[in-house]
Image: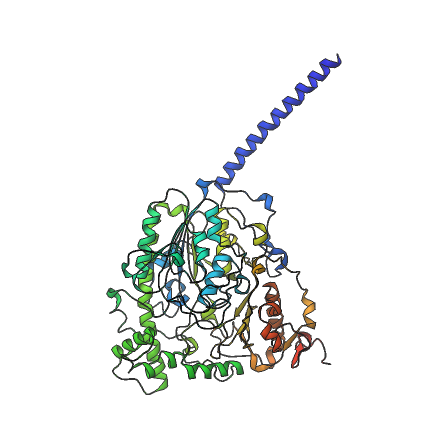
Length: 638
């Protein structure tokens, strides 16, 4: 009897197990069907625990809840990266140039996708900015803060010579295309890939075709890493068309999910255009930006800015009236000047028989020449984008298209032609994303986003992710919730730092928060070599808001600029010393310290020169400094 009872009990247990097994199989089938019907999963949002500016809606789910997407469900990705492309040069942004310069193929991505109106870079300089996109790291943690990496001295992009030839990329830095390749994606790149971190490209791209040299015509690619370059035959014609042709053929041969990256040279100076475009815009009078006649370093500017503007005039750097204007360029057709100056000289001679004597007319003439040659370059870029859009058209519903630039650029604003400075035209960059299963056509995203969000967004859409330890260090967030239509953004403040100090462009830090822009021109070179472990160090604890009362900052009016972006979107009136803004400048200062801390930008580590000179944010007890509490009126001075 006892044996029979045991047998019955065993039989019952087996039956229960079998029923549970069937239930699990049914649930898996339901889950699989549900996953196929749903948009891509909510992203891992790296670094939530330490970033106080991140919204609760962006908080990361536990790793165990993240599901790997099946190969057939993973989208293709086409990433189109322009160079020095101003938002104003894309007609979808409806800027002052849109009346005359139309970009129909780039606009089509916005018409069928999402246009980001508040996207910013953390360092407006080609090499560090591109590495930030690839790795998701700020420049001070990626190891590449200037055009020469961590080395000082000039660096030649064309020849790859100079002390910064092999840039000191932090040993732990990882690129998101390499993560995609490890996840089974076919990966390809063609075009400009900044000299000094080709080893990152070689690890990320199975089909790696960087330029042998930067040129607009008769482009030559390398097969593989340029240090061991296998030269390929030159492609005749414009560089953007050559990039499109290289990737068109590769895309056509793919049978599984792929990632294709087009790294255009356009629209970087010296600007190049197709012969069919060289007669265009000759009679066009381009609309002027609001700040064209605002003198950078003029009345009301911080003293450090005035000194920098004077240095720029002496060295003909950045201020286009002096570097690229007709006063120096008209009679220089045979002299040793840059290609950019030669092109502007030719355009000015074409438009005007002799240089105008009036300063206002001279500036307008220079602006018209710049807008003309720049617009012709953008036309070629737009056509190349169209060719690549046509290449993915058969799979458009399963292809993510991301269009961006490495940073913006000044096209006459504040009398400048360059980037680098923490003003809107250089900090802002165009960002457009199309993915038909997820993104509502013609949508506009006004949330504050950054270039280090791009890689995390692509990985999220592809169902891939960085290793947890690396992801925890990243300042970015996936933008997938915004693409779905969420209105909350990943942050409320954007931190900016320009490291490549020079007399004409001083080193500075800035924050954009609460409708304000605060810039601190500390004006020192930061030559400290970054340690290899910077990309893998664990995050440090957050600092409470009240703790900033004991943080010392230099209270020197000549080093600060504060702009009210709502009342003064063109940033022409510095209100740092305006009594009515006393409380708001305190808010902006605390936002800057918060953002600097969240970015783990530690001057003791990354810029000891600033600490030695007493201009580091957060170096208490230095001569000439007061605490934040004293500045904000919450403490009395000793």
